[in-house]
Length: 171
Image 1 (cartoon, helix red, strand yellow):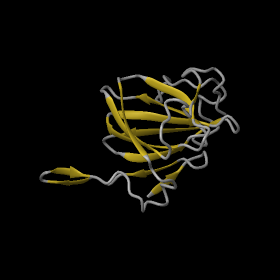
Image 2: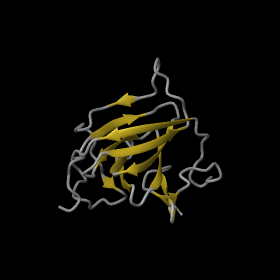
Image 3: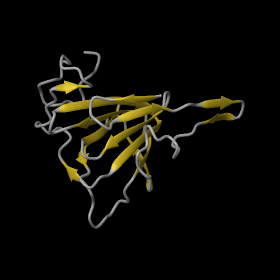
């Protein structure tokens, strides 16, 4: 089942794990998942992050779309729209995996929120060009990232202040 988020084009689909006496199997991407995948995937990447590490913010201005799949640990994946000041925050975990689609025009990044190394496979619809990268960057703690809503919630206590990747969700 596809879940849509407060910023247009961001969506996710839980991955069905199929265990048996040998282990488990899961389909993590299929070309016939047209409700989730709008683009032709041309590259797959692997990323490891140590506990607590933030990898943010960046965006792609030439149409790149990223699809994230956590296969070990847990990540907070965030996307921020400069125009609407909306922010989407998704926790993706290997214990309940999902494929998360992030259109590249949004500033986006991740934080490892687990106590172990996180391992992420992510897919893109554009090849990386080392000579002319399709990336704009800003600091992970940029004070200009000030959401007016988080996941559609204008009453979140983090609204109206610079986004804090380290803010514990239980406070």
